[in-house]
Image (cartoon, rainbow, N blue to C red; front, side):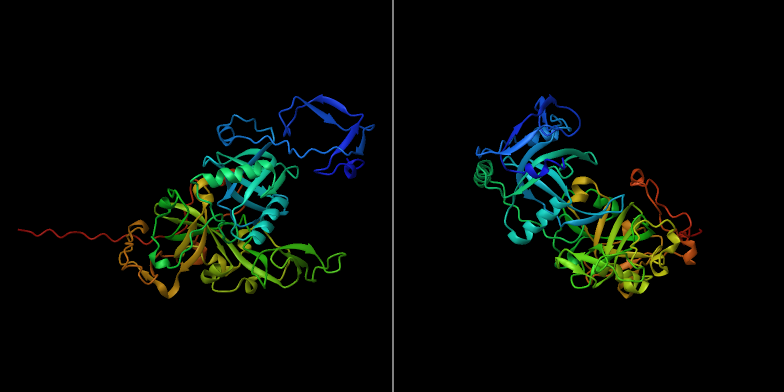
Length: 455
């Protein structure tokens, strides 16, 4: 590979001599062809004047992909219009490496849709294209894409760094696709703009007009929407770090790149980070909240994600005031007791959260919801009857016309009585069957006994 890679350039024609032909097999085959060409030690690769504008596309049928007729070890070419495009998110892999990811759907001329998830440079390519094209519709061609399954749903993703992503290509097949799309009654979907880790969001102008739902109800949503839930924080998910280093100028997550000027890093020295919005290295960073909370009401449980500004409203302090000064950004906390006390003190408290039910929740069954607003403190009314469950709290306009919510009063005697944060969940334990807090002391219900009048 190192010998011949400079002679093999993508999209250029070459003449090859002395190569090997053998049976095609193995995982992630780039075509259905029965044989493959292999470069060997005696192979000669030379420039050629031959040209052919044919892209040799073999576009896969959406129906065959979804129904499983196509073998998952074949790499395919797929084209479609991008819909439900989410913000590019930074995810941390098991190796500790940060990698960008973007989720969206592809739609064909018949209205069929495919879930797509692209990683690394492919996500960056889409991010750059969106910044330049604004809200223009995007036709996406992914060559040598991989068919995979995620949570029981078929999705298209890149095959390592082998796939080729083309946005709004000008080849004959793409022009024909655009013409067919313009002749159909399908709407040209605008690209959704959203915050980190969220795929699609319904914009809320007035949270007072948003319905209050039980946790069991939000799992039944059939489309992206916003709502409120009244629930109690059961624990902190310590499988994630409670903060990230964000650019102070744009409040967006940054990627650590080393030290200024290179060389060995001194522990007390401030490292250099790269900001995607600034498109430059910077040292002007500080810790920003990113809390993952397990919450529960009397109908079910879910996980909530709170970013910096929202998390500050329930913690009461800025993230940098709780930071220990170390730039070793911890993501997996072995001992949940090392969480800052103000964060641990949130466990057992009840709030009204304004959440976004995103496309990932509806289509992929994700049980993590992003919080956009929170009501607490002086804006919370205690419920009149402590025996009244969360799901029975009235949700009419008079109850929350000012954005207020009633507080469920748990008799928590001390911080040591509440459940400790969950630590180190495995992937197989993602759906916890029991999230009850066994150490939480609930106030006994008072039952009114009807007096019987004696004759």
